[in-house]
Length: 206
Ligand SMILES: *[C@@H]1O[C@H](CO)[C@@H](O)[C@H](O)[C@H]1NC(C)=O
Image (cartoon, rainbow, N blue to C red):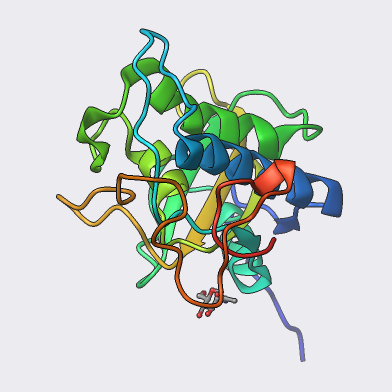
C-alpha cells in the first residue's frame, strides 16, 4: 500500500517559543510601562502627564498563553486577530527576520501609542488599543510567541509575526484601562503595593 501525504502550503511555519531572556524582556517592558503609569510619571510626546493608577497589577508570564500565542503566530495570518475567546491580543509584524530583541521591540511599539497619541480618554481607541491592553490594570498575565513567515502583502514577502495574548482580557469598550487616583490605594487584597524599582507602584509580586 502506498500512502501519499499532501501538505497545504499557506506560508505557515512551525511554532516558536520565545527564549527565556526575551520572556523576561517582554514582562519587564510591560511592568516598566505599567509602573510609570501607576506612579503618574509617564509622559506623552506633547508633555501630557498621564494620571496615576490606584489598582495597576504586576504582570507575569503565562506559559499557557505563550504556547497558544506561538501556535497562532505560526499560522502566519497577516495582522489578523485569532479571536480566541476570553483573552486579549496584540499583534506586531516586521519585515526584519532578526529575532534578537524582538519581544521588547514589539512591546515598545505598542506602548509608544500612548507616547505618540496621549491617553485618548484612557479607553480603547484605534490609535492606542495596544497600549491600553498593555496598561489594563486587571490584566495580570501575558504570553507571546513569534514565527518567521512568508507570503505576506507587499513589503512583507517574508516577515516576522509576533502575537501576545493577555489574561484577563482588557480593552472593554468604554471602560478605562485603570482607575485614576493615588498610586496603589486600590490594590486587591493579597496583592500589596510594590517598592522594588522594576515594579514600584504596582500591586502584587512579579
Ligand atoms: C493563563 O491564561 C489562561 C487563559 O489561556 C487562563 O485560563 C489562566 O488562568 C492564566 N493563568 C494565570 C496564572 O492567570
